[in-house]
Image 1 (cartoon, rainbow, N blue to C red):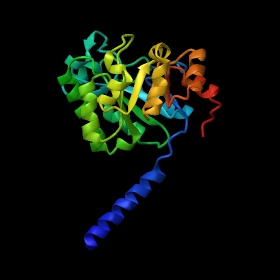
Image 2 (cartoon, rainbow, N blue to C red; image 1 turned 180 degrees about the horizontal axis):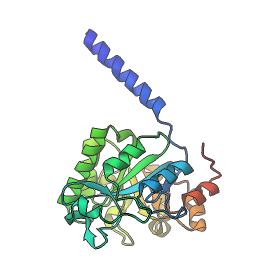
Image 3 (spheres, rainbow, N blue to C red; image 1 turned 90 degrees about the vertical axis):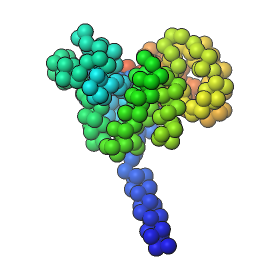
Image 4 (tube, rainbow, N blue to C red; image 1 turned 30 degrees about the vertical axis):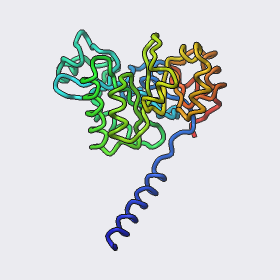
Length: 265
């Protein structure tokens, strides 16, 4: 009995400490691939992450791939200087630095930087553009590394492969966001199918919300967390602010923060 009471006390202390530790910014701004464009620095670089933190973004999105030698790397494109990420070794990718002199960061290096602060979340895009098998493997490896580093409280997940997202949701118990597909409307994007697939968040390209404004009301009624990408024009920013989206993902986070009247708080 005493051991049980002690266990409960330890858990309660951990929960209390966690609640005090994190104080994420109370805005809807997610920097797309970090805050890179306005600052003229490489996307998905550690510098772009630091800039998103400096600006006071609630979140900063990054893209994660796995290399031929099982290294998780933060990079958007499928290739780098003619090398295909998934069929190349990390040592070969390192030979070609980013424009600011950084090497392509590993996911562990990125998480190490993320965990130095407690105001900005990391929104992890599981780059699931190949097969179900690859996507599930990638998602599991991402979760494994996050758990090993104790970084789960900093992280949220999104992606386009339904099976991989469901696997992440099952293994973490955390909310994941379904992306749909770039410029192509899929049946899986409709509210009823999102519900059937068990997702509590969607992150669609902004054009689909314009095409289906009725989705917004339905999703909100069902408690679905709403994100839109990539919202770069001022009139688009104003539209999504007006419709009270939970997250707005943009290449211009400083501009969006200014529109929201948000100062680094």
